Length: 344
Image (cartoon, rainbow, N blue to C red; front, side, top):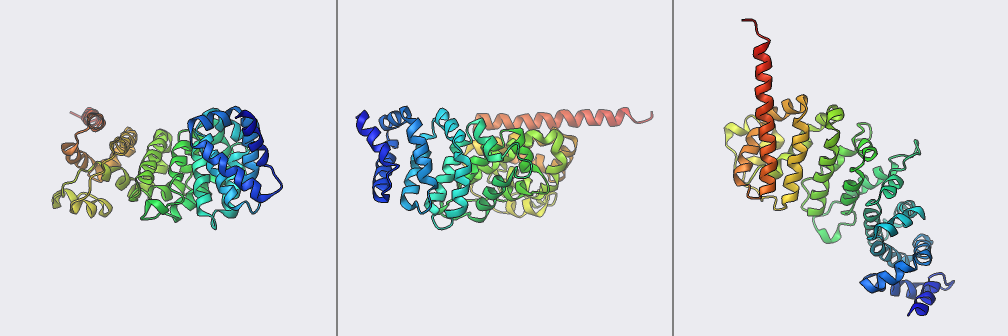
């Protein structure tokens, strides 16, 4: 078996396209099974460079797609991901996507999935952010966000760029990634947030997780978050608003982007992780004085009160309660300060 596998890997570099194509198809099949993955992982020094060459070769066609699929499966292992990054896989993926992604949507989809795996490791995030290159830093991210926002589809089966959502979550876990996403001149976060109403659950979950990660910067970046209020509040509050129709009195204290949606019955957001992460983001915003004022100005506390009544998940209920105790505690402290400042 070992000799046969070595011979197969040799065929990946054959000068004959049909031989290369047949070999990479077999390799793709092997990566779909645990034994095959183990055997190929043991020969990563030969397999990874050969697959990357096939991926990048001009006119790779179906062979490039098979190579990309193989790399997606292999890169589920963090150690192999890190090796792929060191071989230039993140850069190669972006280059191939730019050149051939439009005409080969299947290839583009696999490359985005590969990037989602590569950005699970620190070196992959750094490579995609182009850290250390001041002129180019953030360019790859901007390209991915543009594709992500242009390609949203009603059908999940046809959504070539849906896995960009996972890439965005991964890069927003690090400060450098959050800084690029939140830079006002780039406008990336605004574009991303507007995908929060997607019917595609992978997109929706990724967008809310990305917002939540960016809110870790709320203590220093609140001035960059609040100008996006008309997009951020619907993205965070609607998933936790429950299913009830809100009365006119409640809606009159909300901006139109919330009031209009809450004036009729809605489908509940079934994914409890989305609801929890939305609440965690809200918590980080209302920790800041300006954020808290903005939250009150859209009748946020009332929305959470109604949403809490419908909630059944204990972890999500805890997240509601955390915000509630913060609002009560801060409200009392602010009231005491006001009274303390008055003359008798």
